Length: 168
Image (cartoon, rainbow, N blue to C red):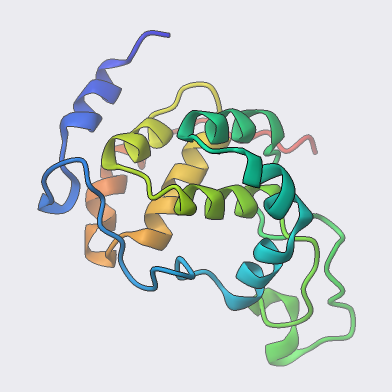
């Protein structure tokens, strides 16, 4: 697979004025700054504990994203019981009852356990095979990088017009 000019430029560009391939983490180094209910459901998910435990490399996880991710929502469709809840307990705020945590959020946390390098994150957000691989790269940045650096990471990608197909 050929590397695009955008990929080559992006990999060499140190975001946020940081140098080198080591990508420091911002915030909580154990929770990845995830919503506690989402994190609890990820950690107790059979998919995360069994299938994803077997994946040991960045490339194996990227392949899993390519073949398994179909949406970027935190919960699988129809798995949350939000009927009758109002106010702070309504599902909108992520406070109510849990559901089946999505494949995408399990894989997001799996990426976090790999402690990605700058080059690996750039590989995700410039990936040409799947918008879901790119989306998880941007989510990884959102949850692990200092807020002051987000514009540096996102800036050149804001005009991306590719649509994630949801099968609606």
